[in-house]
Amino acid sequence: MEFIYEGLAALTWQQIVMYLVGGLLIYLAIVKDYEPALLLPMGFGAILVNIPFSGVLNQVTQGVGETQGIIQWLYEIGIEASEAMPILLFIGIGAMIDFGPLLERPKMFLFGAAAQFGIFFSICIATLLGFDLKDAASIGIIGAADGPTSILVSQVLDSNYVGPIAVVAYSYMALVPIIQPFVIKLMTTKKERTIRMNHTSKVISKRTRILFPIIVTLIAGFVAPMSIALVGSLMFGNLIRESGALNRLSETAQNEFSNIITLLLGLTISFSMRAEQFVTIKTFYIMLIGLTAFIFDTIGGVLFAKLLNLFSKEKVNPMIGAAGISAFPMAARVVQKLSLSEDKTNHLLMEAVCANVSGQIASVVAGGMILGFFS
Image (cartoon, rainbow, N blue to C red; front, side, top):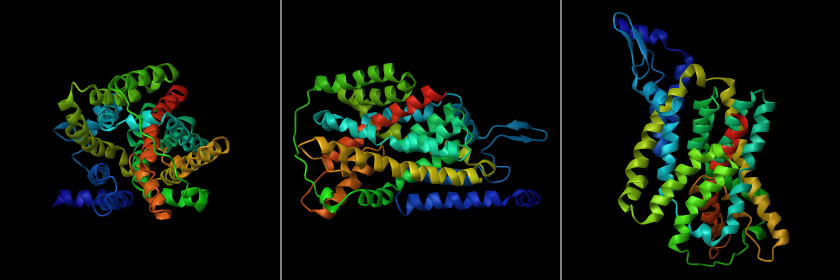
């Protein structure tokens, strides 16, 4: 009974706020089905690490000494010491992605690059708001629309805001179906949204599919060496998929392996959601900057498509540019849904998926470039 009173006495209003944040993440995961594989463990973890004297964190007990908490141990081993968890997750992501449609339409690579504009714009905004350069770079990478990349970059740069960055990155990824339609409609006319694109299909040989991840890794290695941990893991997973020699490993990487890493990553990152670090005015700023990053990612992609249309006979539906962010496959689905709402016979899913897949590559390369420049 005495211990209960001690716990309640040690409870702070910031910890109560974190219980509400955890509850909100759980609500979004279960009721709204927004990234449940990550938001659910993150939400529950946020509650666990903010219970006074919580056993999931390291504790010093009189007469016993220091006891190790499981979530703090996972964080120190899997993220702080090696950044292993977000990197390993990319193996599973790579095994899930079919780059074939993108190889059929290589022009779509450009949209992935254009839709990273929000990263660099947000770095400038974060700097103006008073964040130091490494923290600003870590916050800006939220614009990659890629949770594992955001975690890795912020951890390598030793940011003071790893927890808020992870929560904001995954939350806004989940909210892409809400954020992007408004921005797309704001930046395009009805006539532009009804542009039809010619659907062409080419046979991509197995040799090309196998060589692609190897070549991309080599190019990324010379252009942005710091991106190799990310790009290499992504491409290794894809090579397992395309080789045809490791079907069981490919299926494992796509399912059991990815699910386990995702579950552990969600719980582990909650270590950075302790109240004293999370409940600050800077977290509010990070939320605003993250939203800005997603908005300007979308704007950058749309405007790039419009620019191409000035010089191209074969017009591109500008909405395709919005699919160039890394939030896969949500961004592609948003474009397809908007297209069908304007014209029920205008299907853009294939082109949108190509741009979305290119965004996966562009986001990890951008993360590597940020690390190379700021670390």
